[in-house]
Length: 235
Image (cartoon, rainbow, N blue to C red; front, side):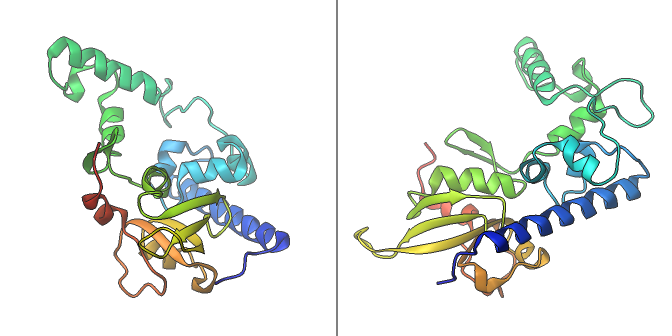
């Protein structure tokens, strides 16, 4: 089994992840020619998730400032004088109009900006209706959440989840009677190929848990959650 990294190695891993995130924020800012990129703009160029940015730096503002850019706390669209509505405001508006119409409204039938609705709705994954989760994951954070829902049924006991690589330490059941367990180091990815794209060392990881397994040559075992859900009760 791979050895658990000591504190100094974990610190180095966190600093490397910070550097990767800063580079991606700067790349997005350069592509969009803005000194104040928004969270929605990073989501549209999602090599790094907004959730991981916040976990690593503590806040979106801290990450933006670390990248040497200007924070945009109001979420103002470049070239516009008014801020975007929040996710909660948009959701409540869609619920209100749905009740009035008796069906899901089109973008032009609500009081919120149509262009914002199209962007937000495009962020839904495939419909799965699994235990209160209506749509499948679209990113690594969705995979982490879903794994937490089903980990026990898949034979795992989670010990810790962290920001440095690998993401998770757990015990994995290795016999049908549930009496033998082994230590497992797990990395979460949306696609298994992301493991390679992120430059992770295979010798430091036992499993890559993903939503889509698209890298058959992956050197470590890959449980694909999308396939495993077929064998679990959706309720």
